[in-house]
Length: 184
Length: 184
DNA sequence: TGCCGCATGTAACCGGTTACATGATTCG
DNA sequence: CGAATCATGTAACCGGTTACATGCGGCA
Image 1 (cartoon, rainbow over the protein chains, first blue to last red):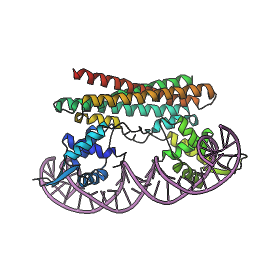
Image 2: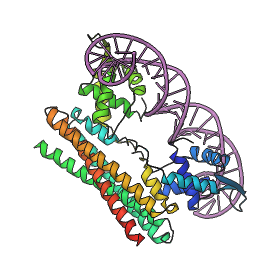
Image 3: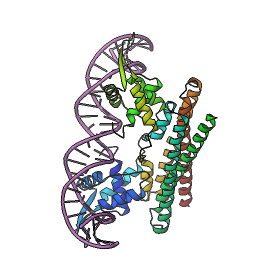
Image 4: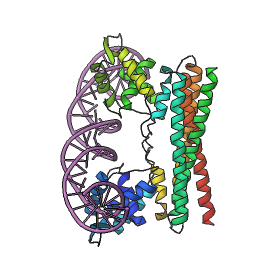
């Protein structure tokens, strides 16, 4: 087991939460972990295979009527332990999140203020859309999954997304304002 | 040229800012772009080579006294144009920044509240250190590079770092508080 | 003598995405 | 009939890191 293999634990966690097929796991990540994690089939299926090989999960073939067959994966007790050990383990060094907007801004002496302002405006739009999406997910969990014992933690992560996005929007606004004032 | 090759433009931008060797570029990134970009020698040297091959930069061998020889790279006008074209170009889809803390929090039903609180406390410490570092860099630019025409933009990126980090700290505090209240 | 700073470079590896292949069923 | 949803899987590729190699000069 490598230090960095968070993706493996994301899958372990989703198995524990009650998602048992590769397809389901992918859906859940796209819908609910989308703001801080993503994953492709190219990793899910091979990882599930490895999980079984390592004894952290089991597979069952399930035939379905009206739908293609599927494979259901279930955590073993060893898998549950592995998940809990990872949860307890101290945080890795947090990787730098590369930010294209900041990179461009850093070099913006090489373009006009108007161009820089336009970039920031379009970034602000993206952020506002994102904020609306988080609010939407929040509402949908409130109305559909409020009984879900995990829901509490899902809200914490959404709150994070909303707070950070909102701080980014404020920064955009402030920076645009500063640049406009200079143009006079 | 690929769509995603921001790293190439980071180097182009630093050549324009006045850093002319691979070693210098690495230093600058480690000191000043560290909060939103990083890069290893394993990419810098090969990329500089490619830049020359594409006619975006030129090389000169420079012998030095008391120091090893070095290679100085300079932007060509074609390189300057490429940089400006990239600056103007619309933002790519912003990649999801994977967040180990949120991933663990998302699955925290599988551990005790106390353990979750501890994780958040240690994350908060990391964030507070980070905030102090940003403030430090800001002060050092104020006292050493305030005449630098790029400085204005450097401050914008640092302001971003401080605002987002501060929002993260607030979120930590709030989430910890919520979890503590539940324990009663 | 050994370490640090300066300076350049590469091969192996790794995590992850993309593009593709396959195929069933349902619905308009 | 075609599109969408369900469902599984892989090979090629790509951006990036890590570990290593090399070597000079100054300093403790």
